[in-house]
Length: 114
Image (cartoon, rainbow, N blue to C red; front, side):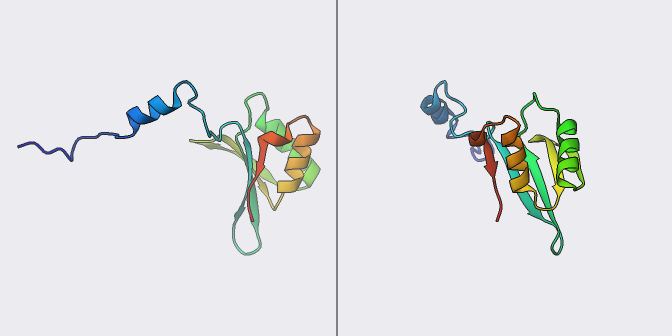
């Protein structure tokens, strides 16, 4: 008598490999720069910037953001997203405009939130 439920088996693993072929990153979110807002407590909010390309230094960007927007912020190491820039307040539009003015493509920036 064998118990088949205890074996780990991914029924979609082979099928996914056949469908995608060489294009593994179809529908991937890795190409985008994500600007999100998080509600803290009361009226306080936190703006996060994730998916920053490696050619940009997050500490220098944070320093420029803090000086330009007159807010405080920090760089946090995340396991999944890498380095994440956090800023106080709702800075989504300001961050987006700042990055577009300084050479980033508008199509690579995704702004999320309410």
